[in-house]
Length: 279
Image 1 (cartoon, rainbow, N blue to C red):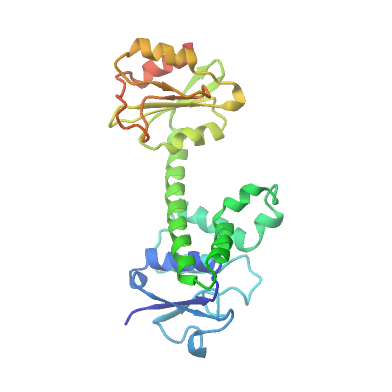
Image 2: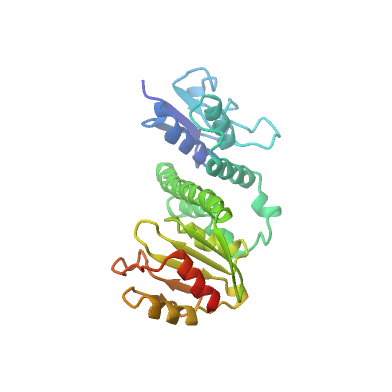
């Protein structure tokens, strides 16, 4: 018998992640049905956990509802903990753990009173607020709200996986000196390293793709980095490679998903570090 997940009408940003978790990580729910009830109620008024094929999330006061407690938790957190206990999710999945932590904070209103600049427009780009906009655009289309928000959750999960990996790669990267401050160089295909390295305070972040050979360098706007000289030196050192200097002067590129025809450089990480150190 197919499983059914029940949540309340107009599901919010802990019910939808709870559904996503069950569908993504538990094989029995991969092709489950969805059912919607008024908030607090259950499917056909049955006790919430009486049928193993019907699971309630964020409604019904069952094991995956949190409205009967003042604990710092939410439906997604409860499902996540259950999936770990049942062996479907690894407690060592740092990206997922960090994701659930933010979802729980959002469900407890941290974006309204604990996070800085709560009234700033940047928060309207966050998935919970995008969900509110979807409900305005497509009223009473709960399946659409779940589908579109689930796609966003998949994207966030992927970004956090890359971020967690990038943090480790940066920690193990080669540090070097430039006139703007410390740089870090990493041999990796993970392009999350570039922006994250700058956010961590590095003046210059260099990655070289170990497979294709492309080099990408990002500098910090806060430290007045200017790669004009490095760009000119790179062109002299390897004139056959395709080099691009962004107008901002903080982006030096020898490869881009926006231009797959760019020819990778033969210069090694050591040679690029030498150029950036002399620029």
